[in-house]
Length: 374
Image (cartoon, rainbow, N blue to C red; front, top):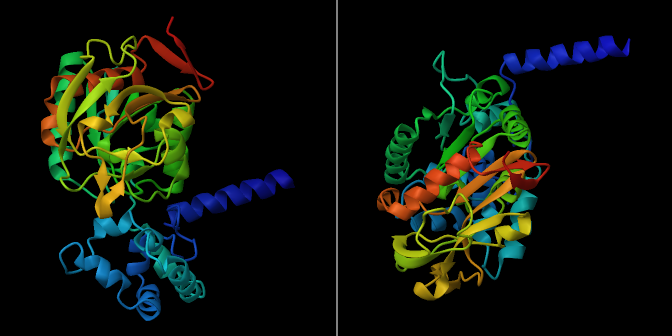
């Protein structure tokens, strides 16, 4: 009897998925100051509640971007809580806004609108993919910087050609399924911003990683101001972005190799200078078990953010690797300026980081620990 009931439940769930039941992660989450701002703005009832509770909050924020409607990209990677952060009346306004938003029921129409930016149909991949094979993932629901994405794509194609790797590019989240992922040695997230995967896609990607997959994240893939997938930010990447300088945004700074004995850093200059948009993080990725590959010399540039916020970290990692179960994760925060994809040390770091993530390095991961490859 129990087995029959479980079978019926499984069939019902499969039928619901096939019928297009919302399966994006926040589909049914009640509105609050922690919701993606975009989810609130696309529901007229939630937008009206905010306008009544704090009339100039969103419009005032919009004007900081030059007027007009709030850019959808930024709205997907921000929350009202983030906008209120630092204001003296933040706590009071948060309570007021939450009181206005909480009674709003999440209707089927609201769930459908929330999930519209996700996709469900896997892309058609080549019938044969020669190994080693790298999937370059480019679904961007948040901030998209075309020059960064395009320059990275050119560099990745060149790396693939040089190494003899198959490089497959996709902007479909539905490629994150067990069957398709099994055809690749690593997935490169090319400046991906914004929540991009449905709940089943998240589960498939996480399982693939923990069972021995490889992840290589480039710059913007670790640079959203607000995250809606804790495992991705805290475990896979291992550090949460808090900001970058804005006056000026791009500065020349000194990158210092932290561990020259590693395969990923082999052949790199002990230190080099380059101009970039330098990220700072809330905590060092070392605290999440990461092996730091390169750091920033904070004395070589001005780590001051908007509103004169002090972005110094002291120990300031800028590229690192870590084990995720049996899987391999590599991240480099370098990669906003197109010129970064032709800087020799930066390109070599990226290339060797991807190679390690693909299981082609001198070490591998097992049960969260890195050991030498056989």
